[in-house]
Length: 176
Image 1 (tube, one colour):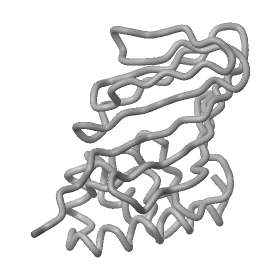
Image 2 (tube, one colour):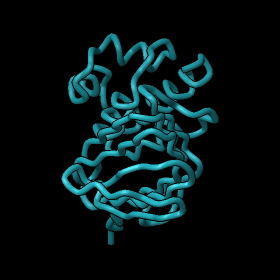
Image 3 (cartoon, helix red, strand yellow):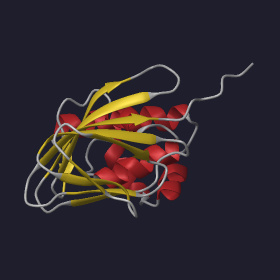
């Protein structure tokens, strides 16, 4: 990640952490990372993995998109690139991502918040996707919706795969 991306990520992370009333130590411990690493990320000096960003979002109880909002370039590692395209502000919350996976890549994702679903549409290439114990082959232009509150995976064969991913979070109860 370049310096601009790291600075934006760090600023988003720090703002969300402070808004939740969490200390650096609390968030680092809850996310299972060293306090010094979290401090470097917030200062724009770290080099977090997508999994680290995801764990931090889960601990902050916010969608991944809240941490990567306003980052214009794809984030990537290990043959996978992800870019937030748009975020909804309605209830339920819906975020849209572009994702590209290199040939012979397996991207495993931990469970998201309870009630979260993912809908993906294959734009190019070939991919298997879904809950870990129920992967589906997608044809070009085909869509698949599955529960993202269970561990799930994306697996490519000999071709690159590009897809659009729509994550729908559970409806939030509004106070009465």
